[in-house]
Figure 1 (tube, rainbow over the protein chains, first blue to last red):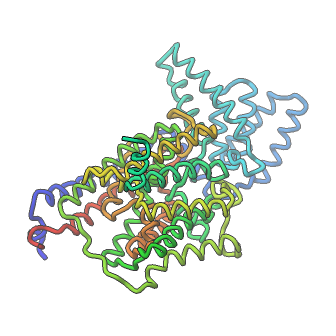
Figure 2 (figure 1 turned 60 degrees about the vertical axis):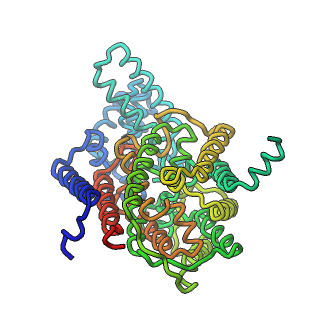
Figure 3 (figure 1 turned 60 degrees about the horizontal axis):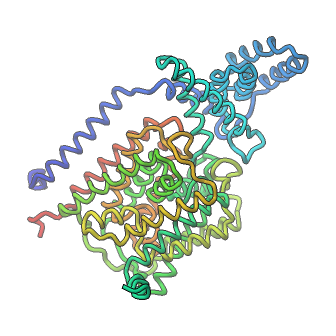
Length: 185
Length: 361
């Protein structure tokens, strides 16, 4: 059958044009693939943690380091513990526990935006933190800190609407609230 | 007009069944979430993803469960259609097209994060991000209606051997048997949304009642809008209105109502892709004559094309999870966007190819 036999009215032509338009958009998207900074970061974390599959297991090396950090905290050497954790999270970026501990310390120091950023990385690596079916669940605690960070940064934006850091922190807080609310994923 | 004449008119009116069906879906949907299902209401696309995981078609350990209410929808429709002698094993006009359509319906729904039924539940629970989906669904349906008005027709359904129509009901009975006997080869999540479920027997009972009512009333979300647009027929739309109102009242009564756009469960922050995902579902549903939920009901009535769509939806559930197409709290993944556009191309080509033109008559 020749194509001329198929195209017999305006509707056919309109639909064909729409098909070509959608394909053109697809090609354009494939060529100029553009991700937001948040997407990029989350994709990076997801790629890094892909080897972990579905069940998160902390590496024994990190566990050993964390036990050292715990000792430091119990003897009130918080500054040293904090520096160790920062280093640990940098050296082992796929360690959920390192990010979570760092987040806890940031929260204790009232550096809420930084705490939320670390919680975000932690829950990407180990979703059990937001899963109330698991023993790792700390969703309620995270939600309190996220809400505090949101309120703090919203206040900052009222006084200086151009504050990019605060704007980014608000976006991250909203993202975390959606994460905490959950989905069918 | 006296009260008794109003009651008599309602009783004899065709709208009573859609109203009853919509109300029951609204109440049961919120109740089932209150009893343990993930927020909020029924969702055919999420259920298909869970069921694909249950059968081992994907490996996400957080999304593996057999939702008994889905089996209930099919079996409720099956039982009612048998008793009313409406069970007819027929179809075959475009089974493969229905199968692939089922895949794309689930992809569109996964990008929106919910099927049309869940869209109503999200809105009724105060999730204002779902409004993008409402516009998308209506836009998609209008697009599909343009095809109907311009001669889209798959051809006549043909009667088939009874056995063909029994496949999906039998498949659902098998899945229920697997759920209750839990053999080692099925997967049931112990964490994540797959581990959130209402007591199975209650969920099954809800599904059976809703499936039966839907079979009698022909309830369908996209069908309600389509009928109104095409024929100014508001019968099914009444069901939709009552579903929304009853779900909202039940959400308020159970303290599950949360008005706003932030921190909503199952919400996609990409409103454009929410719109497009649901537009794909609306468009595709008109092309194949029913939303994902309606395909389940029709499969229960013996429709072979819808049976193909149901199996397509199951495979769609596996594809969505395996290829990471579903939207998440961070937004719509790139692959999901491309898949939605591919879906549009597919339905446009199908719509174009299945037109009955003046020269064909």
